Image 1 (cartoon, rainbow, N blue to C red):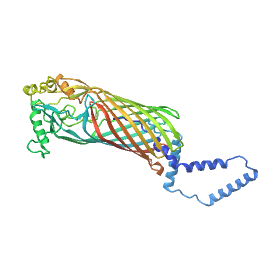
Image 2: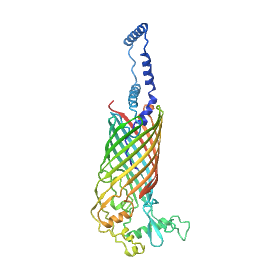
Image 3: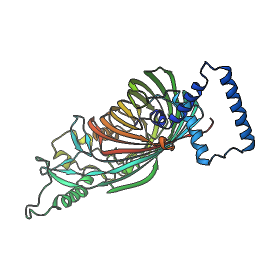
Image 4: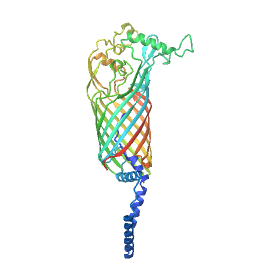
Length: 466
């Protein structure tokens, strides 16, 4: 689930109360000193003391504060001001004059997917072949991303942000031949100890049958590092906040900076292992979130529930046809399957050239979270749903039917749970937060399953104009 959340200072700055007690003690002492009931004698005594102190000040130069003391005194005053704002939840904005910089690193693996029956299958569905066998291309790999984000508090409830995302991926095709009935790798009838037999037979079948079906033999691997995704920017607004309930609205625009996979080596077109790193065109979206503060005990315990709904729309764009369909499907081989749908799944596409219209359309996501903040430590549990409509494709009829038959360009839904933990270093006078999240896909429809999904976030806060 990819969701851009408004950024909050709540966890870090509320934890800063651990470094403020000295300020509170000094204020209380001042209040007690100003209490009523002073007699003329006490006033006179205080005046004398004040005069003596003034004389001492003239005769003794004030001790110069060290740079560290000046820094901690300044940061104490900043934290005290922010605590008065009572920021909490995902709807909290950066205070006026504050900036933040965030690095978000994600890692994951993928080799499986949910089909249109919510069943788990290989990433590319195995191809049935004559002789009671199936060809599993064995596509899989790992990848992740680096997201750099800068935010600034224009006012206490209105922020601007800019996000620069990069992705990396390492994907490979490892074909193997499966028994059609059991779904298990075929075994060598002459050597039961031959564990590499299914792979060798899979490679032979791939080079033999894919051209006979009118398909190109795909590239065996794809490696990419630091490939840009869709740059996005926008504004976040917290229009309403009470002691227990708060809401926010974030509007954003996506730039067409992400890379669309080479059509001659595209996973979604069944021509190779490459994946898109962006939508390939302009898009716009928004997020609306609500926070409910369930329970708060002083500055030590804060329990909150949050709900965020996001929607985006990708506008129409042009995409190129693949041009490596060099052979015509063998009609005798197609007839041997005794399945009329095979003629639509493997049409003659040698005529393709130019481009077709592609509209990503709407995508929506929702995420609910329960968060518990205990001093500087935060714990969270979340559940989310991500849904994308089937992209609209306008072009060659047979090409579109082939692409839809792969079930990799249709309507997609994914459901996942998330566990997270965070810690703030502000009590040590370091305005930095660390957080860790782990996510597991629990259900889906026509969607890739991301396994071993986790991310680490490092975020720092910078008071620029205070």
